[in-house]
Length: 360
Image: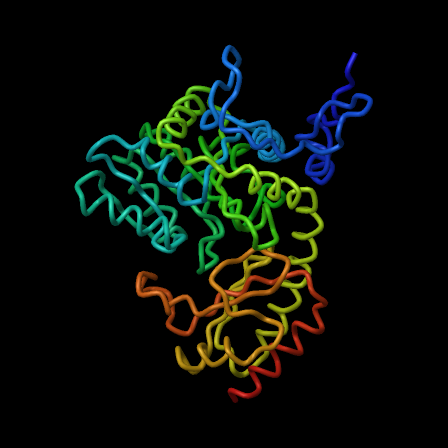
């Protein structure tokens, strides 16, 4: 009889990250789920066609589902996952979201609202009372905590309670925190969404998204939407993402350690007027005292830090967010979002300090 991979609900998440989603322990079985390149399956089984499922996707879904505590579906990108979730909203119904959210989410909401598809209301997520009032006639409440790029924290339990009282679903984008730092399904939210491009895969070489839920009905609806739209991940991308997931706990721990120390040092530098760090995770946002021009110069003066728009990789990247015209005007012009990597913190600091000193 085949021995199943050694995962159980009482194991620590670092162990789950390493072991979940592996093949059964049988003689001569591969230790890792192999890449299955198939658009077509022999008829009569559960998959039938390549758009409906793949063993390599399923392995990643099993692993992330175990980490978040639900059932996972993978998508071709984080925005494909976002789009599929917004499809849950009925025509003309209301979506509440933080005014500072992932830019792609805000743009999707604005596009759908401009076409009369739904009504959007953007609220300061730190004003819990305002969020609760906005929930009263909502169909879907979208949360980020921390928010991107302002790094604000939401009171998820209180907002979730108000949303559910109003009959709304609650989604939490858990990309920044990862399931290692918060598990929103444990707070009874309905859905968790990830850009698996970021921390989950962790090596800046994958585009992929994911949704996790404990609601079997929601799972079936979303699976049906994915099958119909075809927003499925590539097999190689799923395999790379799962390989990256195996070291998630090591990468997040190291990035968080580095971010904590850099946030402390950046607070004392005269070129910096504000440091935003929620106390966990690998993202730090700083505001340059001299504004947008100084921020742009800062991102071009470093040797190790890479000026790039993504985040969550092993390497340290940063950018001035208001260089994107679609970024909310309430984000300071001089704000630089920093994705702290796993390099030696002294090398990262020396690179930053040299660039900042040139500005003063």
